[in-house]
Length: 201
Image (tube, rainbow, N blue to C red; front, side):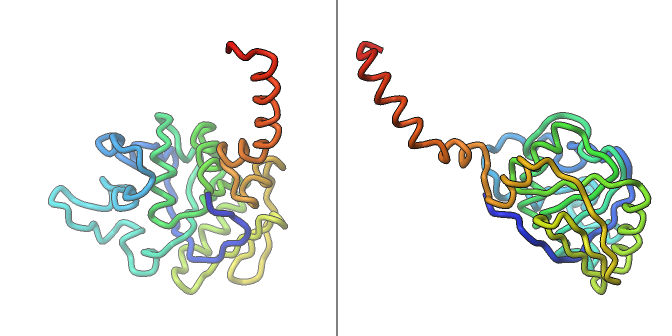
């Protein structure tokens, strides 16, 4: 997966609580195992009407937020079923970070495994970033993962916490397969020993 070191971009304000994975990617799009092509279906039932036309009132259809890289949302983001297609859709759309007061556990971990940084902050910090995000394209938010800092458009800094292991994986672009490849020499050595000790296996 792509490394996550620093990110600067427009943040889309989504002041909704309990945004579930079916809102993020409707169930009819779960047949694919490809991680690309799902961005066009992100928030499909809110972004489009029954005729397939854009809903001009939905935040990601507004000119200022079409290229948003960050979402600032309400609590319990990513609740519902444990579909990994949800972070795939976010990533394919261009979202690399979601900031909220809280996340559903499975969604949170699925984000980390796919190169998306989920940041949980106290409500007052989310409210401040939500205000910043509502200023549109003139309000760029910057995220420095190494320093664990969010910098607002006015220069204010918010510190965030992240598990050191997850931080390392994001900084180095290591998903589960990448982590396994880090041990490839040890794995090869083990296989050689086992082949010698148990040639019948």
